[in-house]
Amino acid sequence: MLPDITVLDAIAEAAAAETLPRFRMPVAIDNKHAAGFDPVTEADRAAEKAIRQIIAERFPDHGILGEEHGDVGLDRDYVWVIDPIDGTRAFISGLPVWGTLVGLYHKGKAVMGMMDQPFTGERFIARPGEAMVRRNGTTSRLSTRQGVPLDQAIMMTTSPKIFSEAHEPRYKRVEDSVRLARYGCDCYAYAMVASGYIDLVVEADLKAYDVGGLIPLVEEAGGVMTTWSGGRPEMGGTIVASGSAALHETVLDLLNRN
Image 1 (tube, helix red, strand yellow):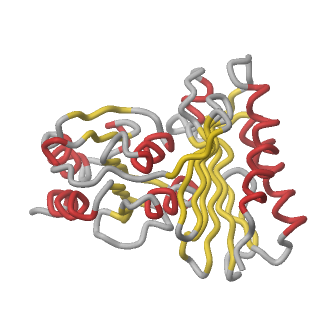
Image 2 (cartoon, one colour; image 1 turned 90 degrees about the vertical axis):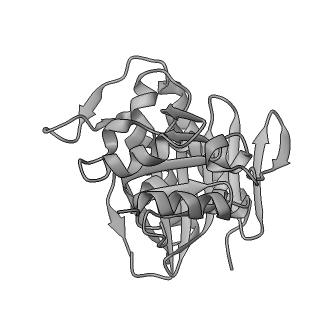
Image 3 (cartoon, one colour; image 1 turned 90 degrees about the horizontal axis):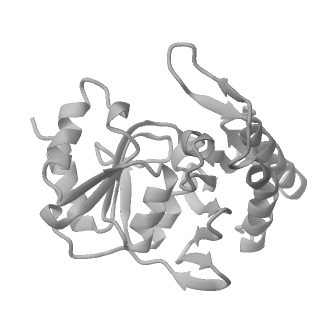
């Protein structure tokens, strides 16, 4: 049986207690990769620690896949996938488009997910048969935008720099075909697909924790999320999230055209 939504609420509140007091405040930044810039802060580490404590206390037989503190029990039926701050670059820049991502996998498939943005007061939650957002004390159902052709679509990607030399021309075919392409927003872009404000996110080089909390949001809101080859997205890689099945099929065709 899946956990109650109140568990996701408790996780969100525990993470926000660590992230919000540090947002738009002076914060030490460590770089996880000497060859580039992959920032991590004490807010990332403290938030994940708080999330893991709740999971360990309530579901000691569940596994955990986390960005900052390693993995436990990945062979178990239920595995929590945690990104305490998806969008650390936005976080350290003072931009409120980061979020706390938590997903629950059952036998490898994402079945529940949450993206919490405590600064804006938005909490996006999905479970089987339901996707919702809580905003200003009001809960609303999430629904993707349907019937939008590619040449009328609004698309986002975190940055054009995330694409390798092999992936960049394939991505560019899609960008050149849409009505509007925008950069930035990390996890927030996927929440906007689920909310019906944009139609498409195309990205590459993602990890499981970048997508685990977002897959149920997009799918339960009526959208489609896969790898560029059309496979399941749970382990990350090259990712496409679309508001409709028809749009998704068109985009996959462009990405895989010789």
